[in-house]
Length: 359
Image (cartoon, rainbow, N blue to C red):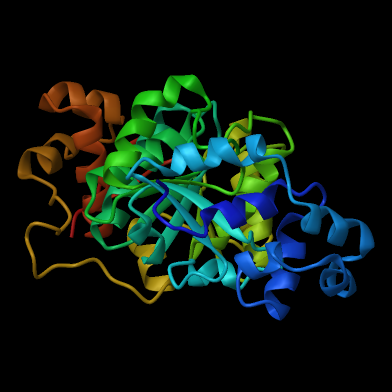
């Protein structure tokens, strides 16, 4: 059985052709519950949604349209959060086009926590992937749940970093939650469901369609206090997320890059338009009125080690060169470099090289 007895009524409203979230929210202003809406007659419904939709609601829908959702909700890790639910994310309630329901796989409590979105190119550079993961890990350690869209590239790297931190990560997707898109991220999606959450407004069984992803983007930004764009070309969908964030009153952050890289041009445009230029995680935390924890060593940033600083004493090096000479994985090195940047010990130069700052 589904976890909530009124799920059948919500799924029924979802299946009424043409009704949509806006119509449901209008009806909920006049009726106390989804059940009362489904049990109303056409005359009661018509003044709110018009004659055609009123007749469609009163007539009901084929049970076969509702059953896939009920079957999915029977699993304990699957949830339906609706507009009248206290667990509905407060950040989303601020949106004029907020969904009337959310499907959630994993722990819905993550949606009540402070979040930061990290987005960027699907075809990110190695440095962009390292930045996305390192920023996400440090920000997650600072208490910000990392939100992204489960795409390849920056999205996946951001989720990986968020999962390593204390505040985990949430993916917002453009399909039904009975499928994973892209399929290459299936294992990542499994870990998100176990240690974070995956969210969709689309019905169970919904396949990926081009038009779904801009709609998904408004939820990525809507759930978040701000959006960090790591790498983006001028035509990147990440710029849509950034634009939506600005329209929603969220903060927009961007990491600058080489003037010669096409994947820097989107970030540079955002900065010209007023996005905050970001060089370290502290730039974001300070802007949001938060700070990195320092009292608990389990959540403090990994400090730069003497061997890292000594290695840079001879001149700038790339992350790959440093990782090779120090015998570290690139992921571990990225976290140490970011912590060293925040401490003012190193700085990133054009071209992705790092230099030591002598104090």
